[in-house]
Every structure is written in structure tokens, then in C-alpha cells.
Length: 309
Image (cartoon, rainbow, N blue to C red; front, side, top):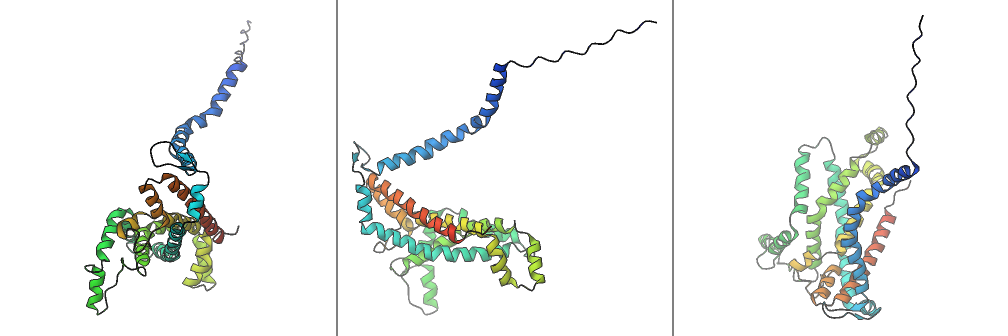
């Protein structure tokens, strides 16, 4: 009887040399950075470098040509002692008071209604609220000029029909800011509604069912459940609108040209004036002071609406 020859096990593959292992490990470590490198390069070229250049420019006197003259803190001290600068901040603060609180309440009520599953044609309503936001701002501002013109505007024509006197919506210091605030509210409320809708749709419906069992009404659920649960969404929307109000430029530029008597010269519009006069150093300092103001206001807003964990 002959025995079959024993089969030999295949030899184990030799491990890669240490140099190859180190190269493979290095490739795995560097792969994420290679993928994000294009974004970092673009961000550095179009965000970081311009910001650093503007910061350096804020310490100089430069008119767009020639050599920049180093003036140190001169631009900042000039602005902090300038009545026009503080007036522009006051105008922006007043517009913030007229816009943000009203808009947050209005957008929340609209978002709650649109989030109702029983509401018919919800998609149509959502699109209709978003249309003003996607409409070009200059076109909307021109429509506002036509509507609120003191002599030929449709609003004053309606007032005359019901026996009320004409109002200088865009030519008096009393009504110019509210008219701009109304424009801003009508233009951007749809954007805030979309943000709040995203927060509402992430809430657990069982919480509302439990509240109904306990006898909570609609207003009680809104105040005690909805507002606390979407505080972070509200804070985000508030910060976004704070930035938008203090950077407001196109609205006063097209509608009022900063008047009457500089009553609608916002912080963003004053920055444009410095740049338009080729006073680039002062304009750069103005922009950084505006950044500080907006940052402090945003931190305050987040602090007030911060949710408790």
C-alpha cells in the first residue's frame, strides 16, 4: 500500500519592508489633507489674505495709489471721535430694533402655521414666502421707491382715497427708518421662515401629544415647548439678521441715499462713503470696528437665547 505524499502548506507572504509600511501609513495620514487642500487654498487666497491686508490697511492712510502712509491708530481714533460714525451705528441699532424682534416673532408664527400637517397647499405657501427673498434686492428697492413716493406713490394714493393726508415716507426722518425696516422685513422674512421650519420639523411630536393630554392649549405649547426646543435655531436666525442689518447697504443706497439728513446712513452705507471717497484706510478701520460691534451683539443674542442642557 503506497501513501500519498503529504501536501506542503503554502509559505506565508513575506511582510512588506519597514520603508514601504511607513510610506503606506504616511499616505493614509496625508489623504484627508490632500482632499481639503483646494478649499484651504481658496479660503486663504480669498478670505484670510484679504482680511489680513485690510487689517494692515486700517493702520495706514492710502487713497488707492501711491505709497500707503503709516498712521498707527489714527484712523480708529478719528472714527471713535466722529459724530458720523456713532450716528451710523445709532441708525443701524434703531433699524435692528425695528426689524429683528418683529421679524423673529412673525417668522416663528408663519413657520408654525406652515408646519401644520392639516394645512392645505403648504408647498404653495412656502414658495410664496420665499419668493421675496430670491427676488433681486435692487428691483425690490425700486418697487419700494415707487410705492412710497410722496407725490405719486400708491400708498399715499390709498391714503388720499380714505381721506388721510400724504406722508413723506422717504423724505422725513420720522418715517424713513420704518419704511426701510418694512422693506427689509418683507424681503428677508421668508429666509427666516425656512430656517425655523427646519428646526420645527426636527421636533418630536410625542411631546405635543403629551402636552395636549395635560390640557395645554395652542399658545401654551408654543411658548412652553416650541420656543425652548428651537432656541438654538432662533439664536442662529437672530445672529444672521444682526449681521444683515448692520451690513445693510443696498436698501438705503437705492431708496433714500442715506437721507433725509443722514437718518438712514447705516454702518454699511458709511463704509461705502469712505470707499467712494478713496479713503481706504479709514474705510478699513470702519469695517473692523463694525466687526467688533456685530460680534458683541451676536454673542449677546446667543447668550440670551442659549438653551439649557
